[in-house]
Length: 326
Ligand SMILES: *Cc1c(COP(=O)(O)O)cnc(C)c1O
Image (tube, protein in one colour):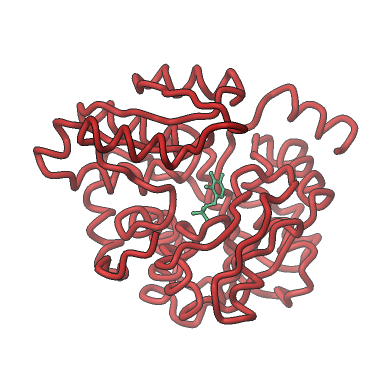
């Protein structure tokens, strides 16, 4: 996993990604809520990446990475292993760029996710999570077919692409005091930090992990990457076991702190988004608001950015969250 030859991305990389994404990714809206502003005594600005193409910010990093393939790489195609938003982001980006995509997914992945990934034109290779090793399968496919593997977060072009969402937010609201960003493997947070450091150096930036899976918080405290068991949480986009070496290097240098939110707090935030703001947010996407509400960080009288990272949620499960909690 460690690739010491890979340079850390910089803000110039974020700007370059923004140029690639112009006219391809949506410039998502920044929403406000008087109700939440009054409740928290602050001014909140919600960057709505649930309205991004394929329903999450991950399109930004995937497209940026694929758009930089050499002609030889593009002709052979891209490989990813994921059952979540990264799979759909790679599949859609590959289709837009006219290259083949192979996605390795567990055979018990949700049917809707398999269908969505195939719907974007990707070839799905299934494996048995209990008896087969997806990394070995991916390595074999990459070798046999000359595919280029794009990981979901630990890659300079992915990290730089993810940073374009916060760059847009800070263009629209230049003087944010505080920013909350959902955190899994750290691609989104590291890109966001590069953008914030360049555009709003005084802004405090917090990563928000699920309380059940605070590996990044532990890593930050101990100064080295801590690996945990796959956490049990409804925030399925942040069920990562460990930071990447590249994401960790950027985050530990620039982040203000990492805080956590519980599943109960996420459900409350989902309800608020649905009832008051009329928007569908996935549990991982609600980490940022849950932290603004519950983390104890002083936001009174401040301008606060809330990154809503995505809106892809199984609709039956979503109904359960709204109607009877967990
Ligand atoms: C992937 C994902 C995250 C976490 O992003 P990282 O770059 O892994 O930290 C957060 N929210 C959603 C909706 C995601 O799909």
